[in-house]
Length: 254
Image (cartoon, rainbow, N blue to C red; front, side, top):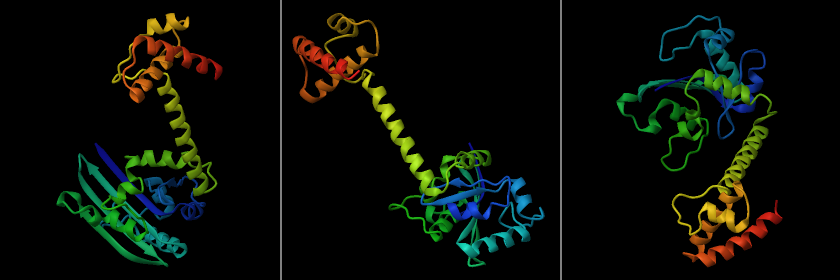
């Protein structure tokens, strides 16, 4: 599986303001208030005179470096590249600050077996202030693994266009995650567990409650399974009594 990344990294809101004059530029949100401006060939041509120079970067020119230098006057700016295939590949990164190139460019062949913290992208993320837990890989900490190619990052940026700023985007993500969790919990409510026994089958539940095949049957069996986990095995009579009690409560909430 391949992985390709060419992008400018910095504060999300700052990068957005810097790229206002680039019609095709988008900024994809990363974690810890960072953003990634994917540098496609088209964006590279908009940023510079399209001339490329040799070196550790696949996309670099004097004009592009000058743009990054100017952008860094308002906050730290990094440029990162990664190219992987089947676990082997390379990374390159550099950092600009206060109108100067303050670190890099650094290049590494990942086949060399460098510790994660010595990978160029992790090293530049640390200089951008990214904080990881323990020996975590900062590459994963900020979410660089959520997309695998430039088109994916472009769509991630387009998806965030409606957010006024990073805080609004983050709040929307939390709301979406909470909604997904509620939906998953609701689905679980109607789904029988395969790992917990139950003394009443679906046909018996329908007969006892006088109901047709419906989601309520799955919910009834799931409830009996939860009772089994809390109290232990139920006799058939105990399960029938619990089932009728539960059905009254279930119907009152519908």
